[in-house]
Image (cartoon, rainbow, N blue to C red):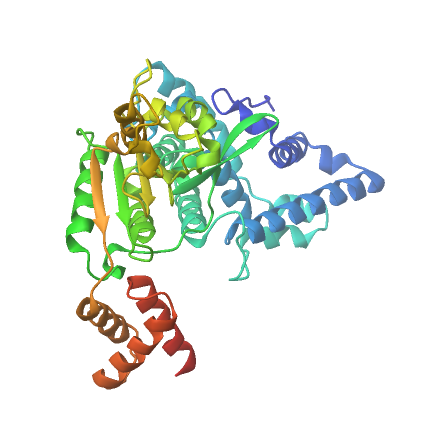
Length: 433
């Protein structure tokens, strides 16, 4: 049998399990199994059992079920970043020579997808091999991916197995790339940065709270302003960096989580960074500026004491450096402070010859956010409305007067009037009634 080589997807061959499985298939095709001695068959059985173990470990770690060989191959494809997959990322499939080249790869991959393990199982007297063809996973499995992602990969694996030919298989993968993208940015919604010895890595946040804008009771004007700016951004229209400020517990961070969930399928990705990592901002932006997504770099609870100077990194990145900020990147931040940097009365006294410069230096960071959105504490009536709405949502059956009386008692000893306090009160009732 002629050795089948991949071109654009050549990196797949570097994956240990893929290399071992395809080598077994080549040896079977070459007739090695039929002529093997008993000792050689025993070694082949050991190798095969080890690969079955690896596939089962993968299934439990990723949340895969069904044909694990198909799921494994599909997982490799959706994570393979190459000239073809990146060209398809959130766009139509390219035409020309690159498609001709990748078509050869999919002829090879089609062969591996269609491989029938039954003959190999008989040759090795190893019926356990067939357990990977219809695997039923534990519902609690899935540490690498959440259920949404593993579901997408398993669905694509089933579609790939039913493809009539290599062309249809390639088109189905291209459709996945167009809808979700490729690699970690295609599969995940949000990320954090992890500096290490080899540089700055952008790592996925594997489980994000499934918050929706409707879950945040009230603040309709604030939510609309946030959505309007984000709508423009994902549509490729002019949009501004955004600062959500106001009192604690009023839904600023929850609004960012809701935005992350709502705009994922429109190509928005959120990268969380803290103020002690600002020196890595330029490196992070260089890694994402040429990707097909829209990125929000998110900073939660942003504020600085008057002696901290890390904000200067942020100022330079947002606006002021020689290099233009990429069109696919915006900065969103939440803060309890409107002006972000602590100001002292001494800033306005005559100790400094240019007191106006001192004040303007501290205000200049906030001014770089073109959209500012205020989240204020609710008054008593608004607080009771939030409590009542959440109680109805979760089926808490208490007379209104009793509900409000208990809510008022709760807020006095749990941080005062806020949406967070109302939510905590309702959670308390759900756990005790």
